[in-house]
Length: 239
Image (cartoon, rainbow, N blue to C red; front, top):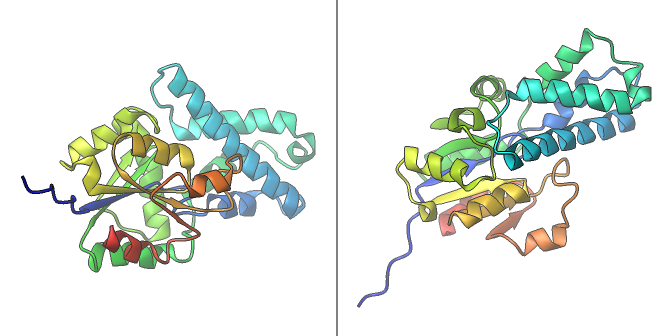
C-alpha cells in the first residue's frame, strides 16, 4: 500500500490582537501623557493580562463569551481601583475612550506584506480566528487596512479559544481538515488548543504578549517559532 501523501496547506488562521496588531501602542497612546510612559506600559500589560484571566474564568465555568467591550470595561475598573496612581489621571470621560482604543490598533510593521504574500503569492485563504466580537474585528480590519476571507470571533462561534470547539467549528464552516490549516498566534495557549485539534502551529513572539510564559519551553513546543512575520510566507510554503 502506498504511503499517504502529506496534506497540502490550504488556509491560515490568524489570531488578531497581539499577533497581527499592536494593541499596546494604542492603549498607551490613549492614556494621559501626565502618566510616565513606563507606568502606562505596565498598566496596559496588566489590563491585557486581566482580560485574559477573565476569559479563562468564563471558559472554565462554561459561560458563553461576553462582549469584549464589557469585559474590558469591567477589568479596567477593577485595575484602576488597584492602581491609585493611575486612577488619579483617569476621569469618567476617558474610560470609554480607553475601551474604544482596542478598536483602533495598528499592525506590526511586517504584517500587511506577509498576509498579502500568503494570499496572493501562495494563493491561500486567510482567516481571523480570535476571541472578541464581530464589531471589534470589523473595526480593526478597517483601521489596519487588512483583508481576510472571513472573520471568526468567539462571539460568532459561541465559544472562547482555546476550547477545541472554537477551532473545530471554524474548520467545519470553511470545510477544511485540521492538517490543511496553519494557526498563527502570539499566544501559547491558543496554539496549544489548535495543536490538540491537529492543526499546524506557528508561534510569533511579541514582547507585549505571553509575559508569563517560559519562552525557552515555547520555542520547542510548536512547529515553528518566529520573532516576527517577515519569513512567515516562505515558512508556510515549505510546510
